[in-house]
Length: 294
Image (cartoon, rainbow, N blue to C red; front, side, top):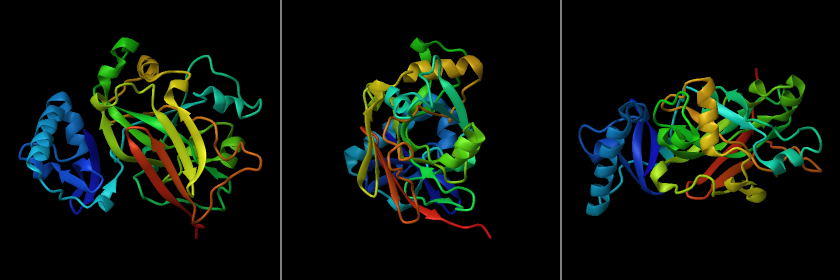
């Protein structure tokens, strides 16, 4: 099942995407169903099963969509935590030319939830603050059930599904700060979407093609089979240190091909469009705009 969130006058609402241009609101699917992603997450497996059953009935009867695709926002509009993983593809380590070494364990950092935006939203930054903005295509894992000290064997049982994330990065701030949080947490620097694909539809999260583009020009091309630390390992590893709650997001890292480490560098500016594409999930596209403060 492909879950989306969309903007309504009363706030964010939950929908199910049958096709790109046919989206059902949960309200249209029936009474008693969760109305928001937060309600779905709170209801865990029971709520998900009810929504899935209603969506199957709607498909069988040909129920028309009632949600304008242009209203979609990030599938998890305000996650409690966005946990990101650095240096999780060997080729991304190697492209940095000695600046980084292969990690012995996952290297975690955070992106603030206020950085999250949806498919089609404009990514903005102040050129007085940063002039070296870059993209990073990543598979994101959305937690569906509380996980604390779970094993790798148990890890996927705690996953609701998967989505695309663009870990937009201010490289000059990253290099200057010698850590990642500020550089990767600017408002709008975590595009997410276009949909959350439930775990049952992704047979193996470790076998998905990952690509990115700038203005339709190819940038990154890899496969999650090249992850140094797998999705189950990351969920288990995080849960040993802190509780993962429903709606938390783990960004699993980016492969080689980012703009900053190219020669010459390929950096983003106003008018550019970034696209992240992941097999089985879809395309996440966001235009860029420089907005000078004041």
